[in-house]
Amino acid sequence: MLENNGRMELNELGEFGLIKHLTQFTEIKNESTIKGIGDDAAVLNYSDKRTLLSTDMLAEGIHFDLSYVPLKHLGYKAVSVNVSDIYAMNATPRHITVSIAVSSRFSVEALEELYNGINAACARYGVDLVGGDTTTSRSGLIISVAVTGEAKDEDIVYRNGAKINDLLCVSGDLGGAYMGLQLLEREKKVYTENPGVQPDLEGHDYILERQLKPEARRDIPPLLKDLGVKPTSMIDISDGLASEILHLCTQSDAGCILYEDKIPIDPQTFETARVFNLDPTVCALSGGEDYELLFTLPLSDFDKVKHNPDITVIGHITDKNEGCHMIDKSGYKHKLIAQGWDAFLKRKEL
Ligand code: ADP
Ligand code: MG
Image (tube, rainbow, N blue to C red; front, side, top):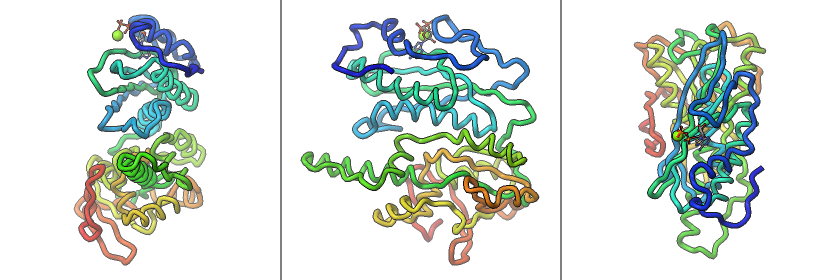
């Protein structure tokens, strides 16, 4: 663990000293790592498996706000959101590289915190940190993570395989990360207007954790295997349920029916949405950052998943000509529309 006390300026260490310092506790866990940090490139060996590769970048002021996001959580999240893409292919993440652009506003200790979070996530997901790049930024912090993974060719699940009558399924519950963000934004505003007031975050642990320390669903690919099912299509939910459903349907050349009363929403998410005068369903459809997995299964697999607490069947796939719709709790049919992150439509326009 990198110890955090005092403030050391970045220029005291220099670039190479900093890289060495930040990566001194990096451990290699995977046999497939032939060479990690320290040479011009990492060397990996996936032998007879397919190699998957994905990358995601987080920029200060766009994806995170350091006034309420601890750097340790940010490091953890940067890894989680990347490995989530590999799980969404039904594959196993193995290696990451981490590239950072930092300004002198950050101390060595601050970056140590970032790497404590990165290392914790690497331990959790069993991935090796095998390289990166370190450069200067004029102001904001940028973190770019690349991740590789491996899978047998026959195990890989793409977005384009959903078939008519397939079940539409989701892991976990939705909308929590968005409500956590609403809460943090509200408390930031209160604090900015009145710095004497302490933030009121008690009793909201679940949604705060969903926002600040999201977990990728590494348990789902092995669970599906244990249940003896293989999804026909899969995607991770980074931008909200509605937009991910539309991705699956577009790529699979299909339509769908989603049932509002089947969408899994945690009670804390539900209650907080009510307090904020938001519709919990809209939060699940459009909130984003839940990092759950959305997938389709053949109808014949229903009995294998129907009682599983980690999986909820929320609808089914239809012919493309029927479009993508949600049946609400009153039985009315609404066209599904992809939503951005914070642009909400009013309920009646869903
Ligand atoms: P080069 O100049 O050849 O790009 P660098 O000096 O940038 O090499 O990096 C030296 C080694 O340290 C390489 O293995 C690189 O992948 C690794 N590295 C650089 N920056 C980071 C970082 N922020 N986190 C982890 N590893 C890093
Ligand atoms: Mg370099």
